[in-house]
Image 1 (spheres, rainbow over the protein chains, first blue to last red):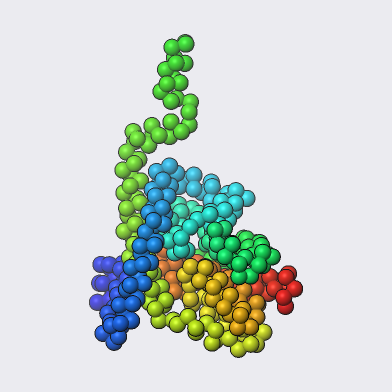
Image 2 (image 1 turned 180 degrees about the vertical axis):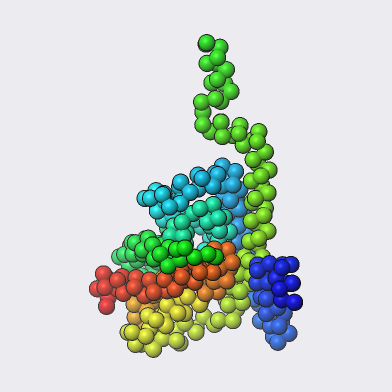
Length: 171
Length: 165
């Protein structure tokens, strides 16, 4: 039975179905909490829609302009320093929540992007230049600068460790 | 000869971006790219929607004052607790700064607050399933575990560098 459902809707369908069931159960137990969660969900989707459009726009352009070979050259094993610069800067300048970038990164991974660069990109999503004034307001300039520097350094270290630990293993 | 040069310069030959554009328009690549992107979109949307639903549920069920109540004042356990709470919670980094600012006023150590802020933005337990479905189970698990310990290490190094230890 479970296998038949899995075959029909796939892993992503089962994931969505499971969470929908949690919402339904929650709605039966406490309708107010379920309604509040749906309200938060509505706001989140509205806020995130432009970023989602941007991500799929970039995916479209990547599919249009780059062959898998091009991606491997830029972000694959032989990409060297250029690959790291792409990953670090890409992570810093990309906007929106981290999970919005999973589809694009999944796509690039299929085309040959290194795991280490994906991890570095995701780590650098933590450094948000427009939010630095906010961090400075709460914790001061020195904290903001030192923390950001460590984050960039650790993004590269993390990337290398993640790649080493995942090397040669399938999905 | 002159005529040839004129034709070449006006047909875009020799200009890489025009060559790419002509190739794209003429070869049906637009349709192919559209189909590929649409396929990725169909595959990703249920996962993203599921992640949104989980995050919304977390934001509704976890009371904001919980963050202040979990700390013990212990220099060793607090960074671990902070990184754990930051990993489970998530959302806009601004929220982590605001909560961090509040925790600072309550006298929580900067070591714990830094671990909390870094884990908040780098570790995602709530969206782990979405990450695993799109980037691979092992990758998602390893990346989040490594990021968890990195959050504590970054907190220690930052506090030491600032002389706040």
